Structures are given as C-alpha cells and as structure tokens.
Image 1 (cartoon, rainbow, N blue to C red):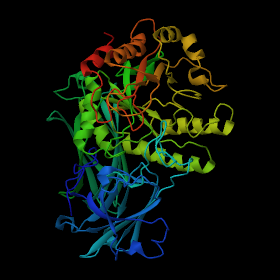
Image 2 (cartoon, helix red, strand yellow; image 1 turned 90 degrees about the vertical axis):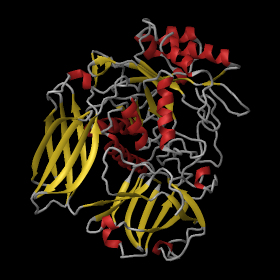
Image 3 (cartoon, helix red, strand yellow; image 1 turned 45 degrees about the horizontal axis):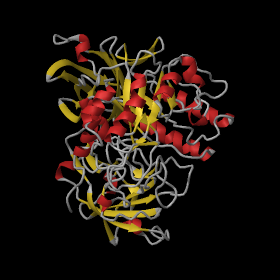
Image 4 (cartoon, one colour; image 1 turned 90 degrees about the horizontal axis):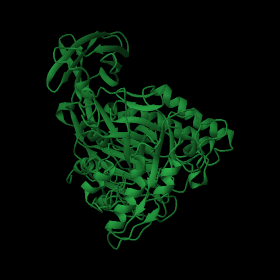
Length: 584
C-alpha cells in the first residue's frame, strides 16, 4: 500500500494501544448506472478500476481523482491484513465519517450499514474474517440534489456559488481497526463538576454477561496521581462519581479555560481475575458552562466570547483536513489573532480538531450540518445524526454550546409554521435531555424559539449603526438584520445573554482570486479600518453584547471574506487583528 495519510490516532479521547490505520490507497469505482450490487462488486473478488487516497473524497485534489462532477454511488475495495496481535480478540472496524449512506462488506459478508454523512460507526468483523486473503468493500450512496438531506455547505447544484461549496461523497474521515477483548469497555461519558471538584462517570461495556469483572479508574494531573479506584461490574453499565481532592489539589488552578487549558489524564482498565483484559486512555477538563443572572459564565465567572466562524474547508482536501499539523495550525492561528473560540459552521468537525482545542485552549460551539428544506423524512434523518453527534463529542471540554439549527436552515417557514417550530423546540429539548450541562441554541441567528442564548446575525458594517443598535437590550431585540424577526411570535426575549454570532464578513482580495463578501475593502488600511468599525463597538461599556463571532477565519472557494486566505495566509498582520480583538 502507499503512504498513509492522516496516520495519527483518529479518536484521541478513547485510545487503545492495539489499532491499525487503514488510510492510504484503495481501489475505487464510480457506479453511475447503479449496477455494482447486481454485478456482485460487494463480494470483493474483482478489482476496481481507479485508485483513491482515503480519507479524501473523490472531489478533492488530495484524493488523486479531483472530479467535482456528481457521482452519487461509489465503491471502494482494499485488502485487509490482520495483525498477529489481533489474534484471540475481536476485530472492530471503524469509520470516522462516510457521506451519506454506507454499506460495508468483509469477504462478501455485510457487516455494517450506516446513514448520516458526518457521524462515526463501527462493526465487529471478527466472524467475517478468514485466515488470509481478506477483502474490505464499501459502497457509499450520496444524494447530491436532495435539499432535505443534512448536508451543511455542500451545494446541490453542479458548481459552487454564493455560500455553498464543493460536495463531499463517500469516505472523508479515517478508517481504522482495533482489537478488543471478548469483554470490553464500549464507551465512557465524563461529566465534570467543578463545584464539587468531582468527575461523574457513565461507563458502558460489552460482553460482560456471566463474567466477574472490575473496572479500575486511574486519574492523574500533569503526571501526578490524583485518585485510583476499582469497581465491581454488575451489568453492562456503571455510574460513579469520583472526588478529585488529593495532596496536590490547588482548586481552581486546575480548571480548564482558553487561557489555561489544563487537562486530567484518565486510564480505564477492565480486569478479570488478576489480568487486565481491556484498557483505554482518555482525558477530561474540569470546567463549567452556566448562565447566571443573564450572564454567560465559564467556571462561574462571566465569559466574553470572542469567536471566529470556521467553515472547516481546505483547498486540497475540502472537508477533510490534509494533516494533523494543518488542524493544529488552524487552532493556533485562531488564538494568535486574539480569538478565544470558534463556531464550527455547518460541519461536525474532525475529532482531532476538538482534541487540539482541548489541548491548546479554544472554546467551540458545535453546530450540525443542516438540511435546506423541511420534510418529515428530514426530521428523522437529522434527529438521528444529531444524537450521534452529541454522543461522539460530549466529553470534549472545549465544546461549550450546541447549535442544532442555524438561520432557519431546514425550517425555512419557522416564523409561521407550527410544525417547524415544534421541530426546533424538539431539537432544543432533545439536546438538553442528552446533555444538560451546556447551553443550546434553537436556531442561531434569527427566528428563535426556546433558546438559552439570544444570538443575532448582523452584517451591518457602519460603526455608528452598530453602536446604536446594541446600546440597549430593547434596541438589540427589536432590530431586524437581514429583514428577519429575531424571535418567533410566542417566544419573546426572556433575559438571555445577547451575542452577535455572525457579523463582519469583510471581503478583501489579496491576489487575483475572484469572490465576494458582505462589504469590501480596497487595501490593507481600508481592511483594518473596516475591521475596527465592526469589532470595537462591542468592547465598550455601552454595548449589551456578551460575545461575538466574526465571519470568518479563511476565504473558502468563492468567498473572500476571511481574515486569512484559503491557503491560511494572514491578510493583515496577526498581531494587528489581535489588538483589535483586545479593544486596542
């Protein structure tokens, strides 16, 4: 096989030592006539004509194919060589994300199907394996023209335009295998409680029936032991709360924040008799997100959000970052410009991005990839995928808010349609039921129903207008940016923190790149002045805004309203942008 791209562990919050990355060169085929199944391609006994670099979608340059045309059915094939260390264990096959409908065969045996283009899935392939000559086949079906599909910024027309970009079809995140014991730890939910200086654990297991097992939990902080406890396992789940006080405890000095991204390490060991039969390492951050007295708070203190809108697209990889280094660089650039957070826009981001936000200190608002139109079928698809998203990412301390809907995408008639209002309300309460520890925004930008934060999108560029509009709560909530009502009738403003979660969008062309933005700059000085005009009104005592999210981090395809070019080159010095973000 060729060079493996994205060779780092794809799930840094739950890692086992025994794993194998399956990225690299795979066989590939378009199936525009949809004949692959009837011709038996799933059996894996015939070669496919093309070659593709996984995990890059065929539309991207890094895939080696770079075909932007619509091909809604595609196939993948590769040999599977099972490491000797996997012997006697179960082999679990993982997919980070496949857009949109995936079917997976091993040696002609169907081992998994999954619907949803942004969430992971796995399969126990042990029983489908042979001693040698194993073949893995994947069929991915996209629905490029379907505007009711949860798709984010992927355009349903042939060519990118306006705020929509190149489509992603098929595998676009890492494929990998791991070996686990016949009894194993499935997953662990970790809920920090800084007020009690404790971590609440919800552990789930597989294959524990009829066995005498224990779970050992070891917590350390910067290499120093904090706590070690062992619990008897009675059934397939275990709930415990662990106090974190020890001789090294310094209270709030261990809390996670963007300024001090302190993390605890934790090891989970499944024990049978005297033997450790399964072990996984993870980490967590002790931090709290709350709303107190109308203020958004982090760790019980008011928190002013200075975020940037991040689309998560890359010139050569599209939705797939080209490397772990590129992911880290985006986080570092964001912090260097003086932002303390990012709103990942219309994309469930790669777990490695969240890892680096946890590690380096950047808060994240996690937003779903929305559909564009509403149907009952859309509701079923979207709800399932959103639930999987929250489950995947709930342990990340960097995530401080959930955003299931944005700008009435998927619910275009929410202002007057009770069914669409009920859907937004359902998503709000569903998210709260899955995770009561974070704020939930029902419909970011406008036409809000029940919501924890009152978020406004406003691309006004005149400083004096912004200063007046956000000088009082009354002015702010009565404004109609984009000619949209901020709240649906029957859901009036109820004292929530007010944030400006899209604004700016200043276009500035630094090369011959053609594109658009919400207001245009002619040169570096003009760009700086325009940036000051839209950011500085919110740093003074006269503003009721408790945070903002500037549009946007980088140029993306035809959009040139980034602070950086698509190649991540700053349009003006980073330190100048930082000074503006600091109110200087």
